[in-house]
Image 1 (cartoon, helix red, strand yellow):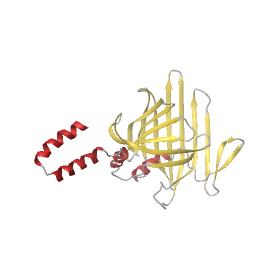
Image 2 (cartoon, rainbow, N blue to C red):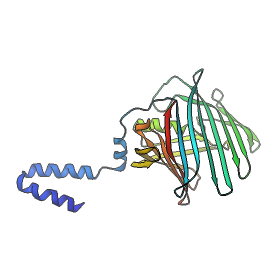
Image 3 (cartoon, one colour):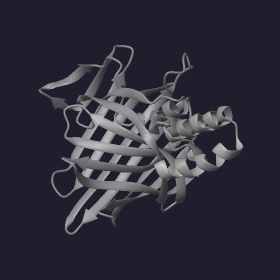
Image 4 (cartoon, helix red, strand yellow):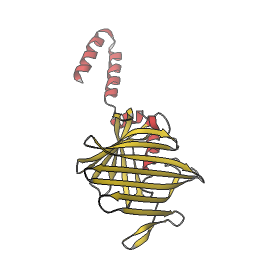
Length: 266
């Protein structure tokens, strides 16, 4: 970086006034010192639009394909929306197939802090190597409680306290990024019926070469309370801020990732 500055300054000193030289130097230093978060914010050039879509991903581990995933957001009658995530992973003789489906009720927007969607039901299925798992959660916002299909410590009713489902962040993070947010969190109920917190922090912006092509994306770090896992996610403003890549680590070892290969409006 020092060599670049010297090469530019020496010719200028002989032909420009000291005031103009000083101005150009300050401007150049400002451009060099822009923070990663500022670079990410420069990608925010349009607003997020709540619209049906389908995203298809390839699942990878150590750069090799091991399966696929799909995210579908669809609009239903009576102000209902449905978000479905499914994945199928196989390596050697191990397999893992998962499906998560949430239904939301669209509310009248009262503020711009989050999407006007309230979860009303969530269903999780897991099958493959090892025991199968099923969990259904019903949200009762009027009585501030949620009910699980499987007892947790012999209980099935729990206080809701503004917790969301395990999936809302997948469509709300794009909205938050479009609003210029760089740090935010989600209180949610996971696929085991337990309350957890995701902390989101914008790291920087990257140019990614993905199966869908080259895209500019905002990189977000996702921290989970009481977890050794660390997750990074990339969202592309040019694709309505939707997820284009997700990479997960545990104890600093990569567990796998998904990369976008197809994205389309429905």
